[in-house]
Length: 373
Ligand SMILES: Cc1ncc(COP(=O)(O)O)c(C=O)c1O
Image (tube, rainbow, N blue to C red; front, side, top):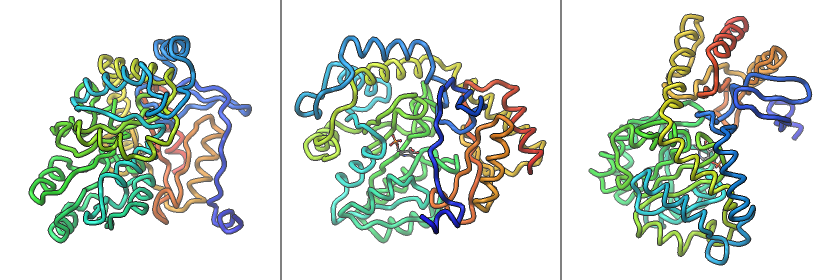
């Protein structure tokens, strides 16, 4: 702890008193929010709020048990059906978090004779899943598909693990090439699309659809409800055989209380809204475009990203913290992301854009960043 404090890496959990999408409020004041993952601005959508209340009234707040005992209700089935219809998957399994779903995806779909091959910047949940799996694992340099190909040639039975949109850098791999490499080398693809679902592709199906893949091209797909879908929990999607296998053996599924049915009912509404409200994705794209144009004109150096995640590299953690604190004093909530979340020396301000931002919010953010940098 002392070491962590001395290195400027001590973490705290700020208390948010009220949330209104583009605005956060606490006892100190009101802030423009550029640090959330509510990409479509659905978290405060009245229709979604209503669905949560209706779900609680119709099905109850808690599921009362694990899914194979008494925890799998009508609302869970309705949400699962909506997800299958949306993504074109045979079946899905619901989890209480993306972190848990990723443990299952890697630990139960790879065995001792397989190799897990992970992009170096994969999320902590994927790294922990690989570490705790029976399969040996290797990490290849971020987005280095030549290195991936070499590993695939060396390890004939492999599962490639990557993300549709990398959570801290905002970039996407060339999924078509990754898939072709998998096919050529008889490997399987496991995709975490936490930051792509709802946001990218036709009807927001995700980064894989945007890049021309089908749901059946992946052995398994993980996406969560905590980001664009504005709720909590996650799902794994795959063939009927894969999902049924997981239903039999996935310990995080079998031995854990099933998601709240009220929340599942709300998430079903969230899926419906994401599918039909293309205007939210259009608005988000406009906001990303505006931010990038203004940032370039102001001379801000961003990592290359076309997504809602726009990282501004700072370098040292204490400098990133200073800028973040100063912005907060000026009414802007923009958190600093520090090691170990990101590699040493690559502390950054991770700007996230949402469909709920207004033009003037983005103009103000860029003006304040320009003054600092
Ligand atoms: C890429 C990625 N995968 C998995 C997770 C974990 O999901 P959850 O927050 O639902 O546990 C996150 C969220 O932080 C993420 O960004």
